[in-house]
Image 1 (cartoon, rainbow, N blue to C red):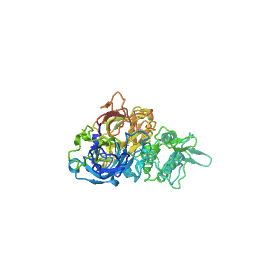
Image 2 (image 1 turned 30 degrees about the horizontal axis):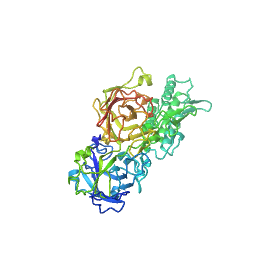
Image 3 (image 1 turned 90 degrees about the vertical axis):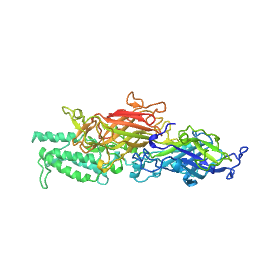
Image 4 (image 1 turned 180 degrees about the vertical axis):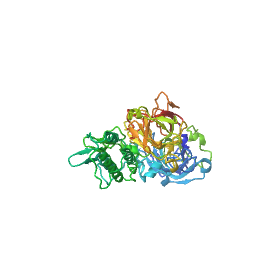
Length: 619
């Protein structure tokens, strides 16, 4: 069986000596002594857990995803069954290992396996399903910082005290917009940060000058008097401003400041009366911008204050109402991402569905010679001499035949630029004679987030999506590996050399209707210039997004694929995505719907599975 070797864990589970099991049979085999703990339903044995690595770490670093160190297992649950699991199966018991047993670590130093004693499991058991979470992982909702750091998967179906039908056992990602804010109904105001965004935009848009009989509106200039140059300037400023797409407070703030600088005049002074011409209009515009910036507020971080990426919300000037509205919402059909379906990353969960192995003699420890060789056991090719396949009233030692695996998949992502100078989209979007040359050397681009589309609404008891499941969730990972304030809380994008890797835990996408998965990388424009992408201008200092397509069926850029690897994400596998920025023409201010087939792909992707595939993709 393939292993996610980068996670540095291959565990095996054993029960030995004394564990309680409930079942139907009470007859003992000829020549085997009935376990003295047998009470007509259960026997007691010892339970051994093979965890060859120690130490701890956090989630979104290499240590967090267990690239370097084993974090330990907690919240361990064990389901016992009388046959191989299938739809509709009801386990005979649900066992909380921590609550039901005691750990004896005497063998841990040499073999990396703990022995749990006095664990109750039903007689007649032939199969086990094991669940666990990495130590430190959140099992209940907590602060957003911890949810981003450790990830989250619900496991309410394992809360007990009794086992549920496997059809009712499932795991779900946690949506970030848990307070269900619907921006389709948002109006301007001063109470909420998002209301202030709309008010700032509308107050500037309403700029006009009037003398009682004549009114000049900035968003509808019809005058022909005054300086022709200033009239043209005011009209051009409105034309550019009305094309604004990014709805984050930071993007709006940058846009307003740029608009103020471009006006070329000072604000209308206190007590000064505006002239009814283009000059008076521009001075009033600058005054209104100052007021709008105050309304917006320096501390307004929307939508980051909701823990969403800046590009999760867009705005659009609505001509009929002559007001600004958000284009991303939980109800509107939009080409943009649905922010209501953005989730925290998955947590580091463990899982195995394994046949039982049992024997009648008690173990004195993992090193007593009755256990399979450690390496063979963890690789699922052990020889089980003198072991049976069912727990009986004579059983004293029990093991899981298969090794513990990961219930989730791991995305290892690197990024680089393919040249010192990248072309933007100024010729097409700005009408310039030629595209701009954008210098991206010396850490001028910083990756601050990764979004992974095509995630299932839930996975079943075996951590795989149910057939017919919707794959409309998008994971947002903003805890970049190794990021510090010195690196602007992100990962620098080098030229020609892959960046430091970032690791994100995701769900298996088995049974998806489409094989390809879109990923978006969130970048900060520290080039010092405004450049143009797929949906308009990306201002200096602003965030933008490049999209990569991970397609396991692509004719090029995919290596390591085999019969076992038929999709982008498989539980217990690491998918490697090596992204290359070829230009900035397909940079987005607002994240597009990562399910759309009309997305402009801006990244070259090289995909690789650990023990399986590599994707190389240009963006």
